[in-house]
Image 1: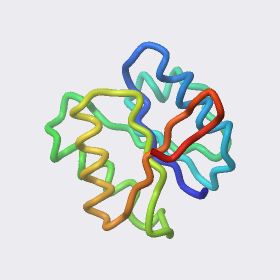
Image 2: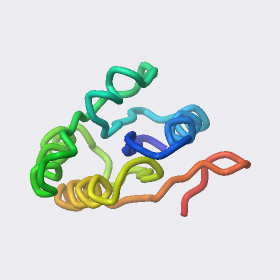
Image 3: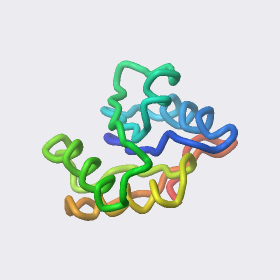
Image 4: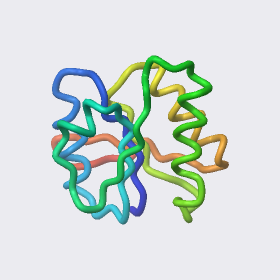
Length: 118
């Protein structure tokens, strides 16, 4: 697996799930879509890059922010996508940004046995 894009926002216990998912696979790069609070408080690994959003913005603005940050950075035709953390608005913007860039997705989740493609 090469690229993981994950939402890192609200939801009790979801940061731990995202962290485990990052640890269980060998990702070339991980992009975490988060806000300033996440940037300040999440203990990121070396292969992690933040995409900072302002969740009070309109969905199309969030989509464009995410797409602009990912543009040119993903060389593959698809990314692993995890949406366990965050709101529906953030998820819609993230999914829309990935599709706007013409990328395919593999939904990735952490299970008791490790990560799995859904």
